[in-house]
Figure 1 (spheres, rainbow, N blue to C red):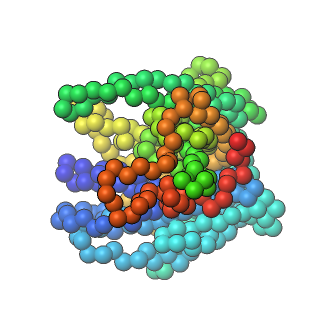
Figure 2: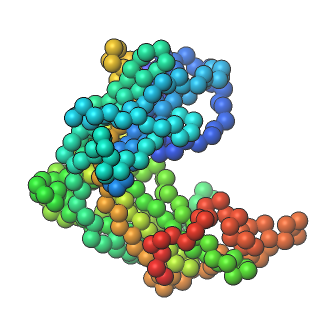
Figure 3: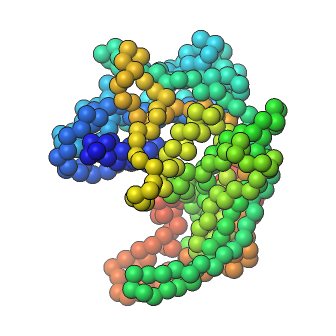
Length: 358
């Protein structure tokens, strides 16, 4: 039971790592495990113009704490059901990616076709994913906004009230061509503007990574359209000078939906004794000559629909602006925050977003 719990804890860490690679400090835990050196592979193909495929590859966290040797990959390829193959380019430590234009001479990305990835190590071991089929996504029609006041309770027994903004996207739940129910997933990006004390305007972009899995199974509901809660931040200075909320809707194959649904179950566990027992999240990636070897992660192919909504400060009660900066006491830096120079904020974009119309 302890071994299974360790494996499951490792899986939680790896799934959180899925969307980006972060530097972390080593943790010294002297625990025996038969999965420490196993591969973790996550990948996604997004159909578009260009289509973009991204794969991250690494090993399960090393608890020895002997540093894990670099992953010895000879090649990473994308393949399809027509027998076409194309090599990905190394884009950083453990990251491989490629942009594929719609008019590519020998590799074609099309809805209705299956795609997979193949990783070859220097010792000849080959790992392949099952092929995942790209489906046609419905088109979101609206992102609505409403306000809600919540009562917050603290450990010392005190309480406070906080206003929250509730964002719902309205979308059909069927394939626009076949009218069959679809399975959907969302990512959310929050972009805001703010002015520093010198009058310069910067734009901050935040990919919302709150460990929440935003999915909807159209086969489980009776309506042809649905509202889905994609984001519910507190009212803050991030809305004081205007903001955009971007909803990125993906259509999932049944296998990809099952993977995200299982991950959601894992993330929402509270330790209640009546919850479903932990277990290995099923991967669609395997070693070709040894399918029994544990490989963690998942590859899927999708097409996205993107919708943005501008949030005017008036809509959310005109919250207080971030600047001017007022120091609380003596400080060596007369302006330690980005209010002296908004470009000092690490999330500041180099340029005004092309979609910013206000």
